[in-house]
Length: 371
Length: 76
Image (cartoon, rainbow over all chains, first blue to last red):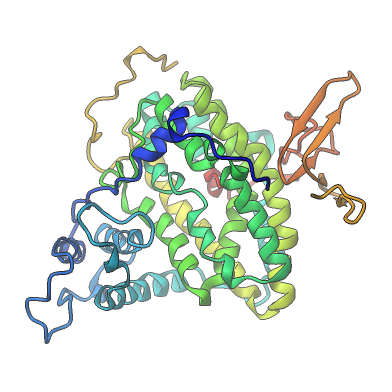
């Protein structure tokens, strides 16, 4: 990288939008006893515990909660978000509050336990074979997944809803994967850093993929404020984002993080092509199309680098982690399929798939063509 | 910098995939059209099926009748 001076912040509209994002979002609305107890605790800030002898969170045990349900997934999402952007009026220091960490650990145990049960790993399977299987494309390009639906028949409102719920990840795109960097070595680390550098715009803030997604959201008339659509996101969305944080924040799951990342990169290009076509069809605007066309060619490169050097490099040094890479791949597919089932069921009924109504009110896309 | 005498530019050749070349690159097509990429590595299409030629768009992949395709909708 060169030592070229950074442009003045006020000179770029893209950067001024970034500045706007620096204000953390408000706490989301609780969805049950776990998330209610958690948001109440966070709202109390660093005030001393009213009952200092007790555990900080005498809440219902997460053991009795549905592992993929709204309450548990939102509580986990909020706890992880303390490691990213935090929340308005919640002290930054609570990121490392021991009571909250213990609470997070209990929830993670339920989530990870459910995933281990639902995604059994065949001892004969290898990471290389699992990634090969992900590469198969349907004959005639007529699959039935989310990107096919949006390309062929999704309404503008459904395309907007898809962008709104995906914003939970894309506005922090590549952040969860940065946690794995210090856990890698040599070839795997160098390659992972190279791919992350690309995700983060190759040193240019306006080219960061998170910024390209914010530009897409503007084209669709969505608010780009970080965390704006958390309340509208169903549990299935929260689970896909929580999976990345779970894998990223635990060194013991570093190979699962690598497997997850490889699965995403391997499957991204063809889906991004279809989503770019969806954006064109609903008249979403050039930035919306650009986000996905950029991912067609970027992820065709990332796939190769991740397979050869990140997965290959990791397993060369730590071959016993092969099954964890496979677990990361299959857990990703499992949760993405749950999300696709949820969205497609709603879309076939003409609904948006959002949890509740649009937080902004009716779609402001009146001036846009939906055909 | 990748392209120095001390450190030659690396090109990875694969039988069933794109040519991987350390960037930045300028690719000159048969018609003289120049395509430029500043990416750290580029994937050059060798199957000629890419709709983003000269860049790979994964069109070289094998196709099958019933892949489990729903997972193909996430974007990195």
